[in-house]
Amino acid sequence: MLLDDVFSLARRVAPRGTGLRWPVPRVRSQVTPDLARTDACRASIATDVLCLAPTRALDHEVAPVVVGGVLNRVAECDPVPVVVVLSLQHTPEIDDRACEGLIELHYRLRANGVRLYVGALRSPVFERLRAAGVVARLGVDAVWPSLQTAMLAAYGELAGPAVVTREVVAALELRMVALPL
Image 1 (cartoon, rainbow, N blue to C red):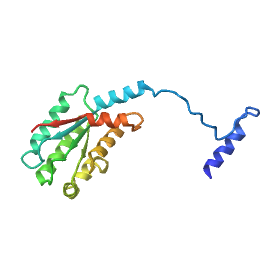
Image 2 (image 1 turned 120 degrees about the horizontal axis):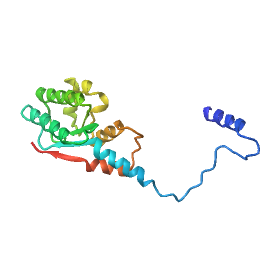
Image 3 (image 1 turned 120 degrees about the vertical axis):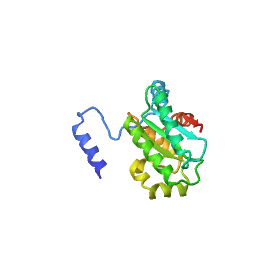
Image 4 (image 1 turned 90 degrees about the vertical axis):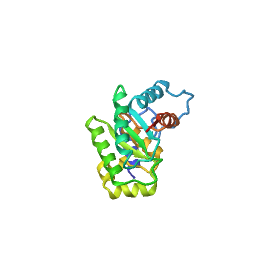
């Protein structure tokens, strides 16, 4: 109904004799994709997104090392990234100290203007993070069971339109770097 109202308004305001008909028929053109926009998208991902995958499970012993390692990697980047995606794919379960480490990492990154996203969570880890209040502190949109979903949510945080193409997904997957512990 709303669309009909828009079309009728357009018919009324269109100059007479122009032959303007709504909807305008679309003509398929043979225009090549805008390579400059694609290159700008990849450049934005390369500078604004940092994806890290710790090589060991996140537990009470490794949590301070992960916090320090992530902060060191962010400090090495020039310019500082807008978002950090942390993969917890090697973590089958998580304890209180590791939860506190994630919260500490979140606040320390946020102090530098960087947003933390967590992905690749197994079900027990996600439930533990929710019970410990980590999900509430990081934000519901920052904790994802899938790593790809976390990377796409991080991409949505970047300035500009968040149009997801195959090139964007490939560029995000290429940004994953192992964080040796």
